[in-house]
Image 1 (cartoon, rainbow over the protein chains, first blue to last red):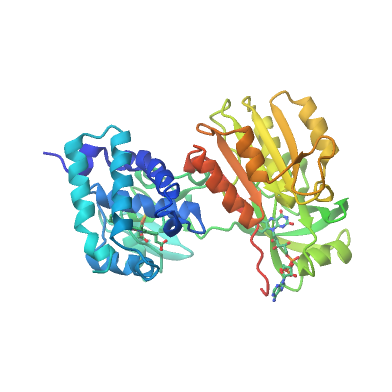
Image 2: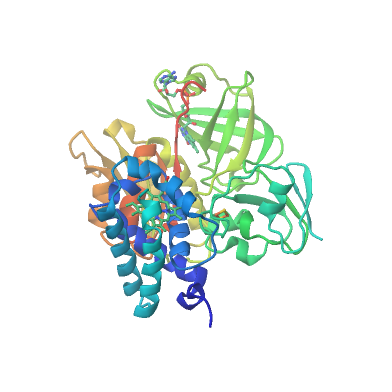
Length: 121
Length: 321
Ligand SMILES: Cc1cc2nc3c(=O)[nH]c(=O)nc-3n(C[C@H](O)[C@H](O)[C@H](O)COP(=O)(O)OP(=O)(O)OC[C@H]3O[C@@H](n4cnc5c(N)ncnc54)[C@H](O)[C@@H]3O)c2cc1C
Ligand code: HEM
Ligand code: FES
């Protein structure tokens, strides 16, 4: 059985998803303020890292990295509502791309497993 | 075993080892984060050697063309020479100085050896005393001289010197070219959107001429923004150029100062999105004031332009340096 990442389509799938996902996030008033980075190209890179990780792809982030990486956002008020909004945009992105529901469920489980680290709980 | 050099340091990659890991093992500092070819923080540039396709997947066309690659997913099969970005240094002299408007000076430079560049890239101009500033190229290599458009910055050191003191034949140094904001062939029918404020027009003119020279057939929309009509320049020339090319559409836009004939009034971003609400499938080039470049990037992206089709150079000033 190939991995979740392979089943979703690997790096080409990340490339296809990143613009759709980032456009949704930037248009979502609940969370857009966290993502209005100075440089859009750098933000796109970070969103690709996020998607690769959520798709079960190769990465070297630990829970501790996620904690550190989002601590400055927690300090700015990042909470569970924001987390759910990101998850919703992720799920909608995959639906829009026609990804099978059972794969979406697995992606959402991976994203959900980072919740406490991302929110610094 | 593939060998590569980075800024003169020779490294050997172990079998299956990435360029990033080999460099780190040799004590070379390279920024990195995901180590999986996603975040682009480990990007380096190769000046010779063959790069594995996987190390350039997902990068913009202008980066690929210049040999940029992601070192964390690069397992080279042969030797590579890696360089920090930024180009080479050339001695040059001022060939001509000409006012294009009260606040814009056209500077032409002649280098001893020809500089290889793509129109729209920039170079760094260094004065004899070491003061250095970046300026974008409005010329094509076949023009011979390098053409820059310099805006007079209030109490600006380099721009003030060029306007008031510099003389023809004065010796300067240039380093370059650099930048990824330029035209690449391969999609001759794609609609192009070029937008900028002030001397952001300089690289846009270079890109525009390059696209036409390379046979671009799709529509090319050039928007030049300024606060007031006095901030626009080369209007007659661009209007004539527009008339001579059926696919070129030039629109000057001013924020204040009524609506003089042939000039649109309003904010640059709103003028553009009102005229082109849907931009999926387009390619965009944005240059000039950093705040406006940033805003336009976001607006074009939200209107559907793919992130990898957006090329930009923000004219960041470095006060105090
Ligand atoms: C990639 C790139 C491409 C560029 N291309 C172009 C181009 O094609 N055309 C162009 O005109 N410009 C371009 N620029 C901008 C250019 O490089 C210079 O920044 C610009 O010409 C100003 O340089 P200066 O030496 O005249 O002014 P500086 O002396 O650097 O001063 C810049 C401004 O800061 C203010 N300032 C200076 N010192 C201080 C201080 N201590 N505190 C607060 N404010 C201060 C000055 O009053 C001035 O308004 C580009 C920049 C980049 C990064
Ligand atoms: C769903 C679980 C999440 C995962 C797995 C995740 C993962 C990541 C990863 C891998 C990065 C890139 C780090 C780097 O390379 O620098 C990142 C960056 C980022 N994340 Fe998350 N993230 C999650 C949730 C969130 C949420 C809920 C928000 C805010 C609403 C958020 C906002 C950001 C921002 C703004 C960045 C860029 C940080 C910066 O520029 O400094 N993330 N995330
Ligand atoms: S470290 Fe993220 S792309 Fe190489």
